[in-house]
Amino acid sequence: MIRTGIIGMSSGNAHPYSWSAIINGVFDGEEITRVGYPGVTAYLHANQDTLGIPAARVTHVWAQSADIAESIASAAGIPHVAARLEDMIGQVDAVILARDDPEHHREMAEPFISAGIPIFIDKPLTISRDDLAWFTEQVAKGRFIMSCSSMRYAAECSSARANLHTLGPIELVTAVGKKDWVKYGVHMLEAVFALLNDPRPLAVTHTGKAGQDMVTLEFENGVRAGIHLFMDITPTFQLSVFGHNGWRLVEMTNFYAMFRDNIIEFIRSVQEGKPRLPFEKTAAIIHTLIAARESLEQGGKKIHLK
Image (cartoon, rainbow, N blue to C red; front, side, top):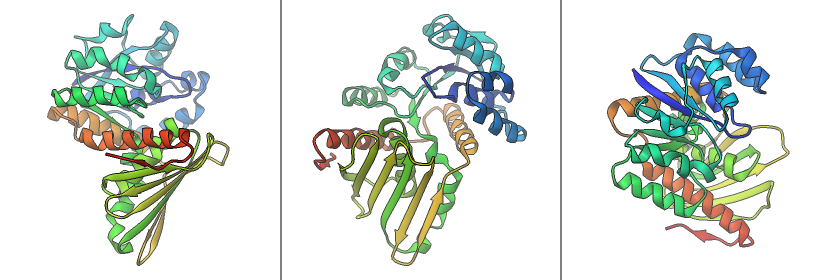
């Protein structure tokens, strides 16, 4: 059994609760609802028959306050609450950094990376070029670092990818989502990149504004993608793919399944001794995420990606 530690939590991100419950196979819906996540309680109830990952168990949790850590522990059957982040070293075989505040990821991950403990870092890995260079250097040294949005494992995307050839040569992908660029733009980038089998991005242009992100990507294979992320629209995550022979709409709605498949891929990676998702794919997405923000800051200038 892979003893797993959970690091929580950032504002509005329920992953410490839901991911721990998915792994351990138990949850306290009343507690999860009490802290503000009734939607998580609903999808855990709806998927009770597939809860639990036999190869792993969340055994330890740490959060910025004891109250939060104890709440996560009681909600997902976690036996140990760590007083300090570093106290999990030597007690766990792997760590999930289940926070989506990228400005803190390097600081929180560094003790485990230095100790050689496999770590999964929630999206986005970082929004800093300096931190991305540091993570890349650690991977080059053989450290186990895995990071992505669960959109990479969305069943809806997998189904569309399997039938993509029926559309003929692909020229355009459009993606529409809700909320902010940093935390949710990465979802749409992950979905687009995964759907197209991770082509090399050449350039990115942001012609929108804060709260109304409109980003254009140019890929080496000739495909162009337009990503539209608006803060106040009806919640949605969808892609449209246009080829010479047809088009397809892909709407991603089964969040439980993509979370579970993401966790399974991480656990399988730990069992195999290296990430099943090459870090180069993550780095390409994070480079694009950062470049789009730079384009916005520079008045919509096209940013060429190395």
